[in-house]
Length: 76
Image (cartoon, rainbow, N blue to C red; front, side, top):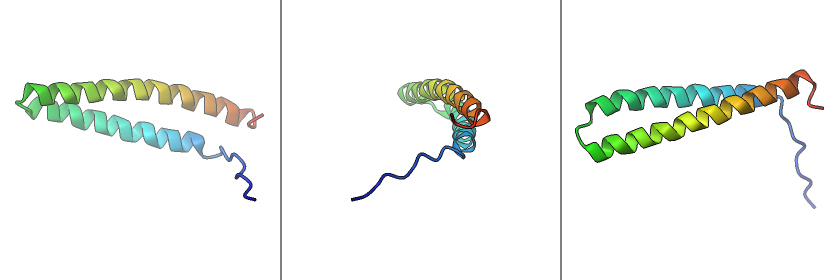
């Protein structure tokens, strides 16, 4: 019988921060691309993608705050 691995959250803050950094880079690259795209549908698709990224960033920032608090409290 396989036992599940224990929950190791020690690197969660770093992992989430890395995801935030990558999302911001992708957001900025998409904003730049939107200026170069002539096709309105493609431009709208890119705008929609960035709106989803904005929501993801908000959620990740909340999650990293919660993880940082838990880390400070020793994950109790």
